[in-house]
Length: 356
Image (cartoon, rainbow, N blue to C red; front, side, top):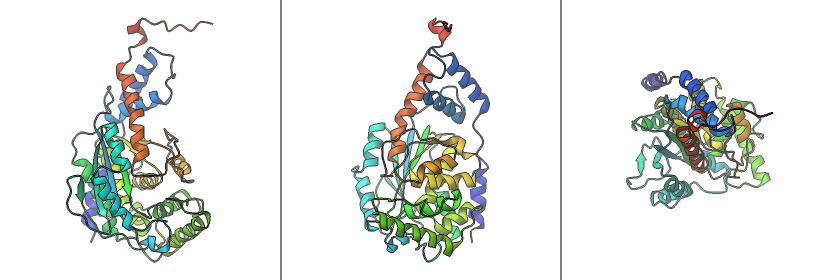
């Protein structure tokens, strides 16, 4: 039975309140008063104002940064939708534990805390201090043949990510990365259903499929939607029918970040799918979201557009793991630095007169 989990999730969602619009207005006024031409710092100004409203402070912060890398496997891999076997998921998590992954390197470079969260890896690893073991099952079921998971399991995945963030009393910025071979396939299914894109429009190469295999993958996405008939008005049903444990946990991380009034930076294609689910669970959540980068997955930009988000970076990334979001942390640091450190026109005794 899932009723108690439904109640628990609703109780958490009730804690999410909109960013402080009064603080937003004051921050916008300060931006206009700083010793520079108005709007000359472009999106840095917008980000500083957004963070001030989110964090409910006139001094937006970036120092306490958290990355939660959510890991799970997918039964749909047996349909040939990935060039890599599921074994790579557990191998990469073991690599991350030793600090040898891209995301762990970027975490060190940006001074970010990182947690590895196992919500559904097929195999089992020995305990490790960097990893939280919250395995719901040993991978999802094959969505081309039936639901990925039960509704109870879907709720557990969201609550796991959410409540992990709530264990951290103070965070300024948070992102959710992922590790799960085959997870662009359920992400394409979620995005196709919730944006109206066709399965082919929503499906890309993932980790490097050839054009003919992309067509095959799109057909699997189409079949998954036809077989399972997820209800687009019910994000938990969508997650249960065609999602993944790590995708649910990522949505939970975003929701937990909003409860903690942190800036929530989303990564790439899979992060965008999780953001669609999170926004469905808590309408208005997008005011907390910042799109870290544009992925090479073809449907990513359209998905961000549906969320009302514009990516900060476009570096040709398609790795996942949270890599693009962590790179955006540096931009947010500079957004905070200029807002908090610059003098106003009056304080600096700089003329605000425009000569004609």
